[in-house]
Every structure is written in C-alpha cells, then in structure tokens.
Length: 521
Ligand SMILES: Cc1cc2nc3c(=O)[nH]c(=O)nc-3n(C[C@H](O)[C@H](O)[C@H](O)COP(=O)(O)OP(=O)(O)OC[C@H]3O[C@@H](n4cnc5c(N)ncnc54)[C@H](O)[C@@H]3O)c2cc1C
Image 1 (cartoon, protein in one colour):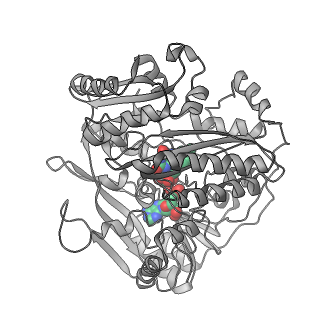
Image 2 (cartoon, helix red, strand yellow):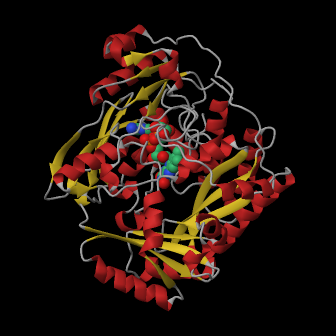
Image 3 (spheres, rainbow, N blue to C red):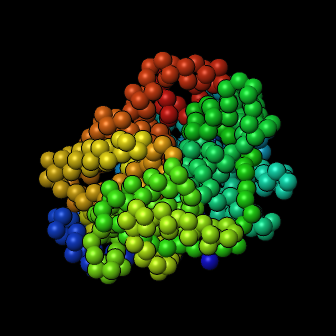
C-alpha cells in the first residue's frame, strides 16, 4: 500500500484521525508513564449546547442556502484545529472560537463574491482547508464565518510535458494523490497530517512532508497561485522562474489566510516511483548521526526520506532494542523512491558507513514506513491516561543546531520540572538543507491541574530559547495565533509594518483572518 491508496478521512472534532482506527497505548508505555507521575485526571466533559448561528442574507443569496450552514454541528466541526490545547479545549466542552456560519463556495468567483460581501459588512472570514492547523490558525480575534474550501477540488490543466497540474485549494492530499496516480504521477507531499490536510492548507502554511529530502517542501512544488482577495484576483506564475521583480508567489505561500484566499495552485508533479525502499541505520550518538546526514545534505547524494532520531526518541520508538544489534545509539531512517534506487542507495550507504553508520536493514525502515501515520493516533489515548503530549518544531543552520537542540530541551525540562511535571523530551531531524535542518520535539509529561496553562508556560520557555539560540519559531507548522508574537519579534517591526501595509491594500476592511499571522494594527 502507498499513499495514493489511503482513503479520504472525515476528521471529527476533538480527536485525531479516522474514528475507526483507534490505537491503544502499549503496556510498556503505560508503565513508563507512571514514572513521569502520569495519572488519569477525569472524564471528558460534554460540550455545552449552543444555538444555531446566523448568516447574512447576502451570503445565502450568493451561495444558495444549501451551501451556508449555521447549525451547531457544522459550526463545531469547524472550530479550531488539532493542537493539544485545541484537543483539551474540545474535551472541556469549550465552544469559544466557533464560527457563526460555515460557507461552502464552489468556485473562485464564489470566493470573490463572499469576500466582497464580507468586506462590505466588516464580517471576518477564515479559510478552512483540512482543519489540521496546530498553531491556532483557525481561531481569529473576533467573531467570524469559516469558509470551507472542500468544493474547490479540481484536478485540471495537467501538462505532461512541463509536469505540472492545477489543483483546487480544497482538495485533500489523499484525493490529489489518488487522482494523480490514475495519470501515473505523484506530488510526493506526505506530511504526518496527510489523512486530513488539503492543498490550500499546505500552500498557506508552507507545509513540509516526510519525503522532503527528495521532493522538497510544498512551497518549492508550487509554480503558480490564484488568490481571491476583497479587492479582486491575483494570478501569479506564468513561468517556473522569472526575474521580473520580487517573486510575489512567496507573499501568499505561508500567508495563512491573512492576505487572501488561495483558490488553486499549479504544482510540479513527478512520475510515480517504480521502486521504493526504506532502511534503518544506527549511529553511536545523535552528534555522529547529525554529522552524517549533514554530509548527505551538503555533498549528496540525497535520499528521498532522511530522518534521524536522538537517543531519547530512539529508545522510545524501538520497543525492541535488539533492532540496534543490542548496542546503544540512535536510529536513522533512509528511504529511496524513483528509478534505479540501487545506485543511489549504494552511494548513500558509502557516505553513511564512512561517517560511522551501521546498516540495520529493511525491517527497521519498513516498520517506520508502515507506522508513519499512526503516531498521531497515540496522542488521544495518552491524553485519556492523563499525559500531556505535544510537539513543537524549529530550524537553524548546521553550526547552531546542537546548541539550539540543547537550549530547547533545557527550557522544556526546566519549565515543566518547575511546575512539578518533569517531562520526557524527544527530538528528531526530518527536513534537511545544504545550510541547516529542522528540529522536531515531542514532549510527554503528566498533566497538571490546568494543562493548557501548563503547556503555554512550557511553550513560552521553548520559544524564548529558540529565539535566543538563533532558530526560527517554526519550520513548517506555521504562525497562526500561537506564534504570532514570536514571529513579529523574529522579523522585526519594519518587516511586520510592511506586511500590514500590504494587507491594508488587499483587505482594507480587515476581514481576512484578523489576528492570525499578523498582529492587528
Ligand atoms: C497530527 C498532525 C500532524 C502534522 N504533521 C505535519 C507535517 O508533517 N508537516 C507539516 O507541514 N504540517 C503538519 N501538521 C500541521 C498541519 O497539518 C499543516 O499546517 C497543514 O499544512 C495544514 O493544512 P490544512 O489543509 O489542514 O489547513 P487548515 O488547518 O485548514 O488551515 C491552515 C491555515 O491556513 C489557512 N488556509 C487554509 N486554506 C487556505 C487557503 N486556501 N488560502 C489561504 N489560507 C488558507 C487557514 O485559515 C489556517 O490559518 C500536522 C498537524 C497534525 C494535527
């Protein structure tokens, strides 16, 4: 089974993934959690009842009554995203951040019409693609309507000579892969949220998938964008590269709804791989492994998937330490897709052996491949058990990476330790570049009485450490509301003012996702 065979999953509020695919916490993990002081804290609360919302008549007239939902179930299903605080709020029955209505436009012209009406009425509007935001990207600063883009699901303008295709913003990643498979192509974008996320969300957040070493980040795949704004349409990308001024496509990639609604993108595609091969490698330490993957990133050759777990993550991931041949150390996963993978594989192996790596064989690689979308399913049962589980990520230059990792880990350990809930902090690298890489942290500890406040404190400490150690506040999750202030501090007041000025031109009545990405001015 490959990604193009995975079904489109209907996410439900407050729990990740396909409701039919539950996961139980392994006994060994439950025992380990007890050492962290994790205890069941109570039962989920039923959400308070709410009355139906209201939608302005002009929107109903524009889209038709069947495409404007005001019932509480539809509104609840479009409330916030899937960060751990989002899940905890949903479990606590917190109905704040619900949209007043959910709109389902069916075309670019519909989106333009909605934005025109919303702008006239001063009504805030937030685009909703797959709804998998983990940074508060769907909870603006004031009452709003959600614009669910699922009807914008076209796959057209396939150009087999240039290897590009136009994809609608509301097309789920899974549906895009299934459609491309029929034509013999793949996008190659597989984030861990692949079962839920959509094309527009990938573009609007600069998403990065697990095969980024081979296929690149999503923003590197986009060659054209079509954007609807309250002032009209912007269409960019008449050539793959251009020297005609700054590349304005980049203004909307990562803009998270604040500067317009991306209604479709033209993306680069590649032929479906005829071969796929995944294998594990062992290194004596994270430092040694980091050196090895840096050599691949800088001097090549690059595999399609390249990830390196630190000591803590390796120990947690490997239920059977014999996978490492009984030795200590860390595990790396290396994957190859395409044609003639054996040649690349041999060349990569040569570099890894030279850097001190030991091959662990295909089983380790296949175990990772088969479980790659299962890990997020563990978060809900862990929360049920009274554990606090959350992730955060950053990126930095190679020379700064070890200090960045240490600073973030120390900040999390100190903050959560001071709160009486010492954590386990796991880390891996899964996106590499010639000049640096991302660091992805998973944090597990006991839930305190106020787990949302507990995490906020720890996250603030981690964000402060990231800034001080020269990292970026996010490599691929985006800014949303959670990272808005850190982002403003990272790029500085003049850069923020410039973006706010652009927003004023495109969105004079400030209806596009207010408070998301940019501070309000
Ligand atoms: C379990 C889990 C695993 C994850 N793993 C990864 C991962 O591996 N890699 C990764 O990059 N991310 C990951 N994420 C984060 C998230 O999936 C990504 O940010 C994803 O790109 C969001 O896509 P979406 O379609 O769900 O967008 P949404 O959550 O619907 O929207 C995200 C933001 O973009 C805005 N937006 C949506 N569509 C548009 C549009 N058409 N035009 C303008 N703005 C728009 C929204 O208003 C919101 O602010 C993960 C999330 C979860 C819950």
